[in-house]
Image (tube, rainbow, N blue to C red):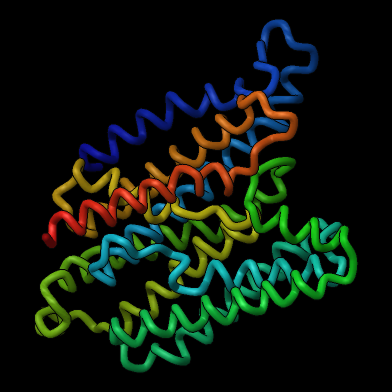
Amino acid sequence: MNRAAAILALLLVVAFPLSLLAGRVWLDPAATPNAAIILAELRLPRSVLAVIVGAGLGAAGAAMQGYLRNPLADPGLFGIAPGAALGAVTALWFGYGASPFLLPVFALIGAGGAMALLAAIAGRTGGIALFTLAGLMVASLAGALTALAISMAPNAFAMSEIVMWLNGALTDRSWREVWLAAPLVIPGVLLLWRCGAALDALTLGEPVARSLGVDTRVLLWLLIAGIGLTVGASVAVAGIIGFVGLIVPHLVRPLTDGRPSQLVVPSALAGGLLVLVADSAVRVLPFVTELRLGIALSLLGAPFFLWLLLRMRKGLA
């Protein structure tokens, strides 16, 4: 474990128990009635899920930025997150949102469909340019179909459900979502970590990477699978939570030597920490209704993205 990962793991160990106590009413395990039940059935699964979702999104962002060699790359550009969202919106449109398993299953089917389409278009060549354009096309198509589903919602209740779900949140999540997401996100993060050495070679350019024995097509398939598992599962259980994959690698990179292989695991830990802290914060804020996690992270991520653009512009001047 490198220094960055050790620091972030320590911060996560400190933040996790605090997240169990945070809420509109702070929990005192010694004085609150039924504190054990509240912790075990409400607070604990929500905090565990926050770490899982954040870890998947953070690792996906680090891997994508390493593959595209673009610090502004985000997992949403792959089209997998919009594909998962389209699947979930389809379930809500047909009234399956009340089922405990159908909505996440539809979301995973949507993510799988986006992965298959992406691989069919760009998987044969392994070229970065074609892959980027294919991802943008898939994301645009999924976004357009999602907007169509919203505009043609069968009733106002279905439209409200769709819009609220797209905003992303961990409210009312239980162990069911944890057991659904963990078996997908953990192998996905391991796949992305496995790509680290090849991503290091790719920073020298595709011709050099091939000369070093990197099969770019195999690398592309591994990335599609890893990002599909991490992002698809995260969207399936939490909705759209943006900017984590963009913000986290930038925060972690100064703590490492900058190589993609040294960034994936720290980004996973930092992503889990960011989503955990953000979810704790939205529970504590004194609003009438709880602020949606996706909105909170977008309010944080948009200024961060603007700051990155201005810094890059200054560097090019």
